[in-house]
Length: 472
Image (cartoon, rainbow, N blue to C red):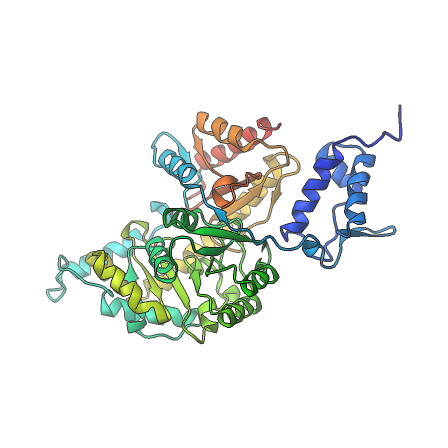
């Protein structure tokens, strides 16, 4: 038996994976790499193969070895090859539409759609509010409420904004038909076809669809799982005039679930203001963050009015009401004009029910219960992933909410996985639709905005089985 097998060409696979972890920012400077033996097990390779891959990285100053301890990511490693400033044409809509169509089917268990299911919505409390409104003669429930929206609801939202570190009045707030409409209006207000939008990568596919539909381009910015958008990369692009607008989802980011730290938010705002580039901040998941962890909105640091803050009640209270809002700063009048010109009035009944709901104190009561329930389910999810998914699967629990990002082992065929899962009655969102440049990695977004029943547990086990069967 050869105790010293020669390295084979599989070292390229190991090298590429390690390089991707470093270049993406997943492993920042100073991070200790898995041991040689761990990497050999992960890739089912020889020790010599792994050592060859590490030697190449060390020769190119990506890693450095510490005797008898291991390998570490070298300082500045992610900048060795420079920052990619090439914008890309987005092409995800077809994949997203196919996924959503399958998710809407009653024949499939949907683990792909980030929608709060009925059993987790405060239906009883909403019905109480509706019953109260039905008895009030001074509230014409069928009457039209024109933009900018119900004045009393906008006052309530201004109170909610204080919790997010933003001092604003009701006149600063525009009520919209959900968060996605707010994002679309914001993007149209600040940019034109051909403009470049700096985005996190991976990012929410809804903004990618909007960029694609409006004929704009995307500039994927490296994104760290613990700190969000790479600000060195962004600064590099801003200083070279490569960015027309910045979009990000910094709180419980969709799809990876991290919270961008306050210091990074402040720095981001500073960079954008210095370059006079607008920011669109999607903060739809704020109320799913534990109170002790809550950050200030990026809008908090905005002294020039160039950050457009967008949010909604869809992910926390009532998905079907489709009520969102934006605090648009210097772009308020432009967005308000769009609301009028496109006749985008929001359901009067939904606005009045939510106004009553917040006024009675139900919002805080419900969200506290929801956070507790989702946290318990996240623990169940983590246990399941670590016990039944294939060896080499990487999973970092989200810092709140119900969106989970799973990275399957290298060599997993995601197209085959989706096909197998669909054949077994399970719908899931694979990584391709979250990357503007069409990158098809091995990421999997699983949404658990529902009670974890035996059926759901069974669906997750089906996913694990499909992942194991979908290796190259």
